[in-house]
Length: 161
Image 1 (cartoon, rainbow, N blue to C red):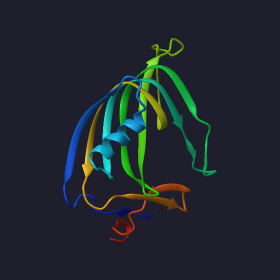
Image 2: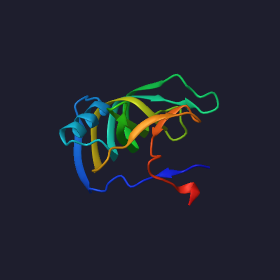
Image 3: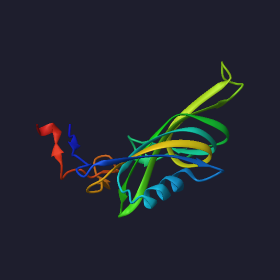
């Protein structure tokens, strides 16, 4: 087992609260907020409603991306969170959501789905974003998983401690 970690906010952290509405693109809106406030590394939480969401999945065994699942209907965000970091020197917005929606075919009339979000169209979302000032966190190719994970190897290898 290998675990890498390092402190990412040696210069402090800042907290922002905001809303996104009117059919805006979720990822683009969070990226615009980050650019406006000179943020390169952050975590965020959100709740609210969506018109549309596209979930993607990664097959860990085959190390390949699966086909997307797209939902186009009124959905409530049950839980939403993510990160901002740099990928190839560009801001990367990484979002995971759990959403619910009315589905008469389900036992209680409500379906719940979730996962990695490739795209989402917003009805109304409230978010809290915590920016970590200091050296930005960058993503890089991780050979063992095939994913672009945080490259924290300049930090502490916790498995060796």
